[in-house]
Amino acid sequence: MPGLASNDNSPPAAAPPARRLSSPLPRRAPPSPSPSTSSRAKPRKPAAAAAEPDDSLDNPDLGPFLLKQARDAMVSGEGGGAARALEFAERAARALERRGEGAELELAMSLHVAAAIHCGLGRHADAIPVLERAVAVVTPPPAPAEGEVQAADDQQPEQQPEADQRGEEWSLAAFSGWMQLGDTHAMLGRMDESIACYSKGLEIQMAALGERDPRVAETCRYLAEAHVQALQFDEAEKLCRKALEIHREHSAPASLEEASDRRLMALILDAKGDYDGALEHLVLASMTMVANGRDIEVATIDVAIGNTYLALARFDEAVFSYQKALTVLKSARGDDHPTVASVYVRLADLYHRTGRLRESKSYCENALRVYAKPAPGAAPDEIAGGLMEIAAIYEALGDLDEALKLLQRALKLLEDSPGQWSTVAGIEAQMGVLYYMIGRYADSRNSFESAVAKLRASGERKSAFFGVLLNQMGLACVQLFKIDEAAQLFEEARAVLEQECGASHPDTLGVYSNLAAIYDAMGRVEDAIEILEHVLKVREEKLGTANPDVEDEKKRLAELLKEAGRSRNRKQKSLENLFVTNSARAKKEAGRRWSNFGFRS
Image 1: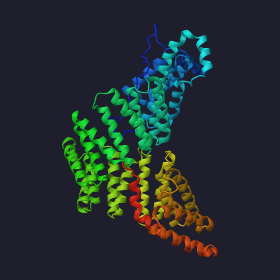
Image 2: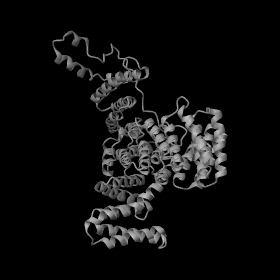
Image 3: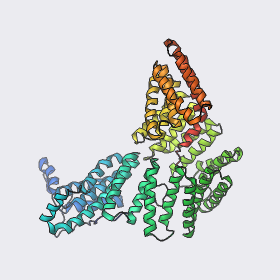
């Protein structure tokens, strides 16, 4: 679920369902939801016994009664717990489906309950079709054409108020269903499907409540957080600005809702490189939290302010912000809390950047002591995120074996956690880079392959990071002499990076160079020459003719042109020469490249 900057990670507040059905109390004896005693008295007639439960579903009071039983079983946990509640919810849905028109809201409610039970049991994939059926029941139909509206008004003018009321109730129920469906997709790592569901829910909510309702602002922020998780920062910024405008319009000055919006906006602007804008929003959010007496939230914002100062190379101010936050968090949560360790990690990163390596390693060790024995209730993803950051510092310090051990610990914490596929893919990608740097190319390829598979499954195949990951996997395949596989990976990486970054981006140009080398090794010399000519032209325009990278490309192109007419047995030498520079560059810049693409929890 999205939950990046807001104080409350729960779904946005929405209007309550149209009505809550209580247990029906018929005038006479209530019908039994189980097969009747007469069927048990006649065991020789199984056909009649099987037919009686279906006949009992025709009772109009049975569906609401079973729905209440399902809720009670969920709350109490007695008599079979979730399994019994799921049985009640499914039978309630069948009974309400038989009632047909007039029972749509109750049917959707029973399906929501069944889906919630599936999710509680960890069966998120089973909940998807249930929720899709629920939203199909209550999602308002598309608006009719103008002529059809006029004809309907002429025929049934007296039923319009009731229809409007029912449409509003259906819209709110559909909103809840779409948001629940989006949460379930997010738990499976399907961010594209999740964002589509959230967007549909927001559309329905705005149509029912109006575009300036405060509840719409909460949904906008919720959807913006999902876009941030998918690295779609432009869309996230638009939604966050809208939420901020609505909250400023309806809330008191310096409200907590406005502060939450500003914290999310700061995160978005920081990701886009607008550090001054991010700092402005963080300072305003901190002032609001101070006015409301939220000391822990102030400390959390101070950490974010320190991160922004660090990005601006204002190191003394960053140290002050981190130390201020560290004092408050130690006092409020104790020395062994993961948030305290996270500040240690930030200080370690700062001192590493300023060349104070002894202090950097000392803070890393302090953080590792906390992560080894964290406070009760510590979230695994928070600990894993800290281990990933420490691993990046050890990698920069040249201790690759220790970095690998830390990444393996982080992977073990998250590999079975639902909704963490993207983070796990990031860990595996970092491990792949480290394996490549120490020469374990088979392990590197396997780590990259696992990360690519997870990103494909979660729908993140259209990000710049995905393109870089394909390129790195291709390099590992080259070292294993899997030339055909490397060519396919470079071609896919080129297509992704051209779309996401453009044909002149440095990462795209790097893939072009690798693809040219592969084409030369495969005997496709003309294709290789064409690609290198394009790369050389772009580099000359961007960097100038005296740049060392331009000189390298000139030499490679001259070598290809010289060897274009030679026999095939010299191509292996060409492959070795063409990749030696790129391989060394990959080893040198691997840590920097991965840190540019994040993966911090």
